[in-house]
Amino acid sequence: MSYIDAKEKYAALGVDTDAAIEKLKNVPVALHCWQGDDVRGFDTDPNKPLTGGIQTTGNYPGRARTPEELMADLDLALKLCPGTKKMNLHASYAIFEDGQWADRDKLEPKHFAKWVAFCKERGLGCDFNPTFFSHPKANGLTLSSPDPEIRKFWIEHGKACIRISTYLAEELGQPCVMNIWTGDGFKDIPADRMGPRIRYKEAIDEILSEPFDFNKVKPCVESKVFGIGVEAYTAGSAEFALSYAAMNKEKCIPLMDNGHYHPTEMVSDKIPALLAFFPEIALHITRPIRWDSDHVVLLDDETKEICKEIVRCGGLEGRVKIALDYFDASINRVAAWVVGLRNVQKALLQALLAPDYTALQDAGDWTKLMVLQEEQKTLPFGEVWEQYCRICNVPGDGQWFAAVQAYETETLSKRG
Ligand code: RNT
Ligand code: ZN
Image (cartoon, rainbow, N blue to C red):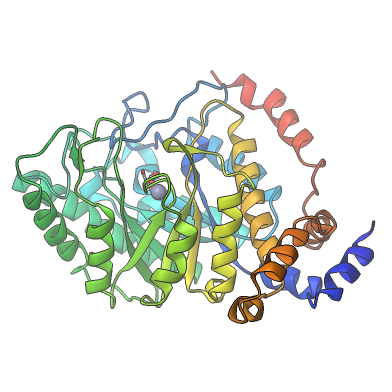
């Protein structure tokens, strides 16, 4: 089977494979820098514990220890993935020149100048995240803290991040999605559930009072169900984050991470629900196993269903901001990036190649709908994928892993 044969098979179902490829090529997907160094960042002691209820597990050799190493690793990952990529940075990845360290409340655009240069050279946009964890002042609650000084520190951090996001958007000529997530919550039954949420709400209000252009900076609020050590109560719950975004539509969008819901809740189903009300939404695509374990994204059913909904609901026209969010320290980290990003690209391409069977649903023809949806699963998708990789000038399946293995031998394995 060649691409030409595959193209004909799809054409018989009314699907134009060339058009699908052309469309996907231009859809930005944000690659998270934090898979490269187990979410450690550069602004605090790299050996401090990761806090905020998130966890990387594994001790695979070769983690990036410096900005140069992280950029080199990213470069290889980016080269091996088709499509339009965007960077996604955390504030903790600030790069300080000549020991000019600044605490999180004092971060400035200049601390991201090297990242801007990196993105410019590669024609990438950049998303951004304030880092409300892994810091001496993130010892428990941050934006929802009852201590006004702690709260103030993190509000100032949020405002600094708005300014940095504006800088990234202006320098790179693309909107910057700025995601607010905190791990604020409690291990055990709270005496007061309302107080932290009111303080969190007011803190986000203060952060977003920092002037910005909503066409350039897209602040989001990401919800969560629970974290490690934060099992009983999360201030930024689903209802909290969604309500905040709904009440502040002129300056904020909701972000759903598919690791942040009860296991039978599906983000794929939530996409059209939110898009019925919000002009724009944002996603963190991950793979939760049992909990928010942030495993590498596979080409599994829910990833495909999420991408199907993105495509069906007009998300590729800019309404859905797509980002990856996972961190596995037990395997080669460059391969982790590449596998996850290629899988999201595959799922999006499959979604673009799916015939629209709405008419069958509307006619109540569930039998035919089932037959056709099932037969779709064995169409020669691999040939179209290979064509997409060729057009994007990146290696096809079976052709990229050797480069990662060579890089591991020559570079990663030599890191202490
Ligand atoms: C944590 C959230 C959050 C982080 C990153 C590092 O549960 O998913 O998005 O993973 O910001
Ligand atoms: Zn997330």
